[in-house]
Amino acid sequence: CADGVVHEQSAPQADQCTKLFAGDSSLRGCFAYANPESFREACNKQVADASGEAKEEAACNIALSYVGYCYYVHFVPINLPEHCGKCQVGGQSLHIGESAPVKVPQKEADVVIVVEQLEDNKEIFTNLISPLVSTLRNDLKERGIVDVNFALIGYGAPNQHWPSLYTFNGEYNGFSGSAKNIYFSEPAKVTKPKLSDRLQEIKKTLFNEIGFSKPAKAFQLAFDYPFRPQALKTIVGVMSSGCDRAVLPFQAMRLLVHRLSLLNSGVVLNLVTPLEDLSLDGKDEKAAANVVGFDSSAVYTQGEAKKKVMRGDEEALHNLNYKSDLCIDLTLGTNGAVFSSSNFNKGKPNLRKNFLQVLSNKITDGLTSEELVTDCKCVLERGMIVKTKCKITSRREKELPAVSIY
Image (cartoon, rainbow, N blue to C red; front, side, top):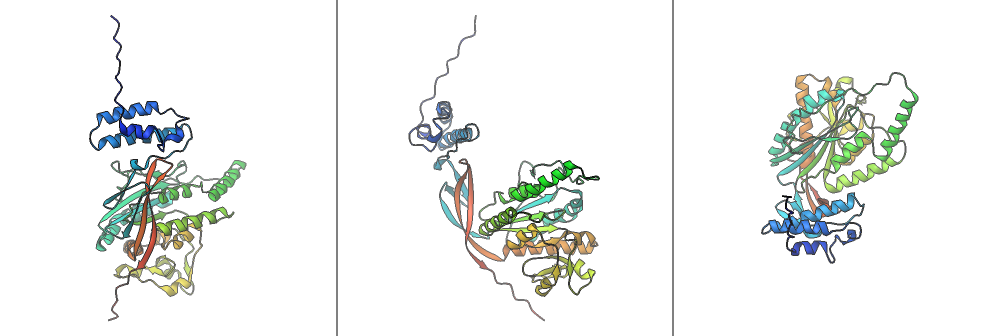
């Protein structure tokens, strides 16, 4: 006998699905391009199989699929219905379009580390950045910041065209200092420049200007990281060479946009970079080698390692010489600090330990020196990605504890 024909019975019309795929739904802008009937049927089945509050969630999952289908297949941008998206802001949930004030700091911090995966950076990553995770976690804990997440982004290896956001046990915010799957490679060497090499150099310059270079893509990924609204936020860039200087005005314009965005959202950018030409007017090389880093206010040396309150040397900043670039300019413009990886590499074990402590202390001070109030709003990106965007509405500098002179 021939196999029997199975007649599937349609699921009953669910109110949740009618609301999404008919009438004045926010999805209606795509109905003329992508027939919603198959999605509506799937929605009815999913809702029928669900119970309680899960029915609304099941319907919204199908709506999300329809939004993605319209966007990526038919190139029609539509918005997910507002009731289908929620943002978690501290202990409260916000629907799309809703906002709430958030005080920072509370007990959380998010740290994103961006590492250039070239061989020159391998020692810095192993001996400075890996131990920084536990040291920084402890320093923040002393300030009452007990919930600290670390993320790791890598970029820049010769055949690595796109940055990598590394995961640990399936979590992107679970970096603990050890990363077995990260690798470091020698940069491609050019012995005899050919026409193709020159064309590649022109291409690289153009990509730098329009924001498609490897560093630009990596830091853009870090800027777009889903920082928790109530958390202290910092990005630590670890570069094996400096950024290229601007040739055309496009990079300077992007720099200004990034600077304003980071300042408004409360993200502090810190940078670890070689600074091979670092020097101090009127001082010898030993004094320059003693410099750990600097910000827009002061220079920080090995001697800061044992101080409970970092104050730096404001006078030395006027005598400090270094070759600036766009990354350094952006770092200083966001209240961050720049640290010399070349001085770390030159140091003996005890000096490296001091360097690590000053680096951690400075990052901690930069994050906890202010009290912020932000206005956080639940928004949609590309019509389907629910994201919390926060903007600082007020900031107040904390008073430094008094230091005894006796």
